[in-house]
Image 1 (cartoon, rainbow, N blue to C red):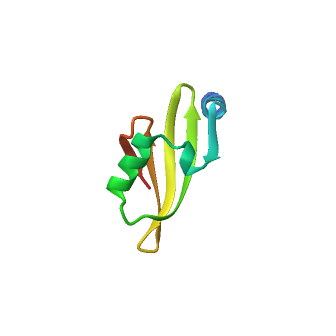
Image 2: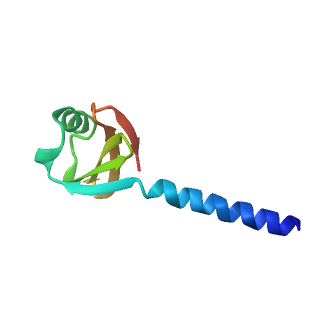
Length: 90
């Protein structure tokens, strides 16, 4: 009986996570489509960035911009909000 309850709980949790991800969209965009505040913040933080590619990520009302780029031959990703505030780096 306990196993059944645990399995049901895991199943419901899995459905919840899937439902949350359905609201997220990622769109490739050009540099011209990136807000000036985001480009300025990116350039200030990563002046040596090369081969920059941009994505706009929307999850509900939240929008952020992801830059995929290379610095010293290492691939990186940086995330900024619409106002240009740095969120994180991967």
